[in-house]
Length: 376
Image (cartoon, rainbow, N blue to C red; front, side, top):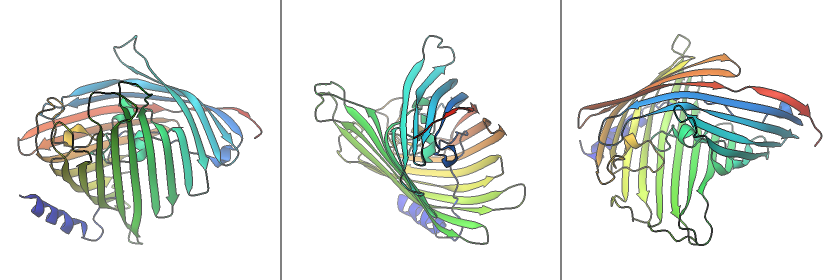
């Protein structure tokens, strides 16, 4: 089936009314980080604790399997200064099981300003990783473990049927004469609800983008500068139900890849992919079945399993990718501060008849302790 025919099928699917799912991809529960007006002029101690065991049994040519057993502890002091400012400082500590002497420390320093009821600014440590609600193919869900702290600047917009998250994550800083490149990622998740009628269907148009830049004019490093771009547009819809199954839906996304400098060693400078499927959910679980079809697709911050370049042998190229995917997550809230999640994922590579899968559990404990009131 050539790519034009696949695109035609995709377009015909997304034009059917009320069939594109407005549901984030299943993954583990991650606690929110909001500015609460009711906590005005108060100081709290937050002690977020994340415990995980994630096992990916991958044996195909694109990415090797791996296991992530460990925990992330993040104690912070949070101050709500008036109605518009949230200040946070602390430390993020990650440790994998079996590495008793190796602790990974990252500072947490964040300021959140509420301009009005619709717009907020975050500077310093961002409301990052899974909070961006990006497609896994564009922004790997497991970055919540690999890179639990993002630093930079972020704008959050939420007004009625329109939501947007725009951020800059500065990953590597350089000075004059350094032999390493500066690295940063710019991201966008824009969602516009198009339909929300009384029948229970809603229809949403998501537009997502990622720009990864590696370079710097004041640094002296050996590799060429890179600027890689991914852009995704699609439709999602969701239908609310009254029974044991609380919602069903469909989704479709068209994703582009472009190397702006055309210097990568793979000589793949543009590509595209289509991701479409169905979803169903209950109050505690989500099931997603999907089909991925891509040609010359690269996503520098995305899940490797969707891509055309092997992460085992970087010189091995699989230009055309066709995957059938299945993802199931189960989440239970045992109390306001205790959440448990289970996830299983499956990927079937159609051209080579190969099956990969992954599974894991994730426990979060997020207590908050009042310290004192203060004047501001």
